[in-house]
Length: 80
Image 1 (cartoon, rainbow, N blue to C red):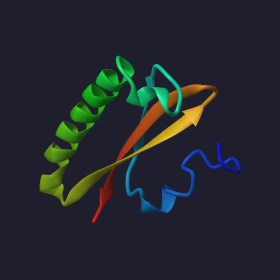
Image 2 (cartoon, rainbow, N blue to C red):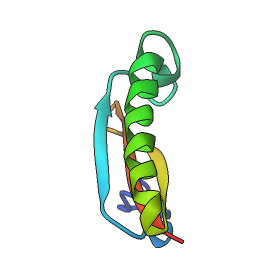
Image 3 (cartoon, rainbow, N blue to C red):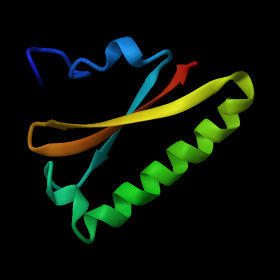
Image 4 (tube, rainbow, N blue to C red):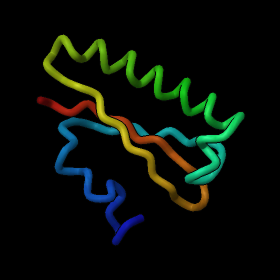
């Protein structure tokens, strides 16, 4: 984590709760097969869930973090 901040400075842009999804691979490895397929599926589901929230004037944001050698994707709904 960057200076103890699990959001790497992005927290002020988040307007709602977050989710963390564990993914196989490291920071670069999540973008290679077969890990990128898992990443794509998790992002697809997060975006679908966020689209359901758009009716409430919210937009989805996501960030990827690396902790303990395992990559994770954190998604959140941020109010406009």
